[in-house]
Image (cartoon, rainbow, N blue to C red; front, top):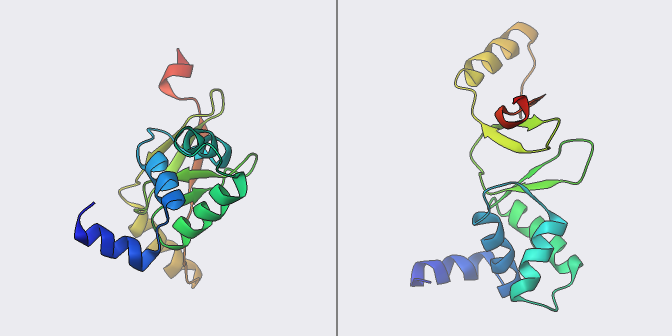
Length: 135
């Protein structure tokens, strides 16, 4: 780590456990459950309790380093992508894909204008079949 990383770690209080949890999420090519994260972190830190991982996830989310994805019918998933985006979920294999709708800000502005509703957050979740499951 660089001294800049050290300063950020100190300011954010990234403990060894939190750093390990964050590293697992950042190096994953998919959205992970807390249990999957726990299983992977325990390869590096064998005695790590599930509660510690859960608390680390809450801290990392609050710090804005990860995003929680709730699909409504299963465990929460954790996402390294913290930029505004939405999700596509395959109903057959369960894979979750990030997607940024290019016209979403314009659509939200139109909805707010038409309804006089102040939109604070928009989460779009589309369900269907991924390319692999369509075959």
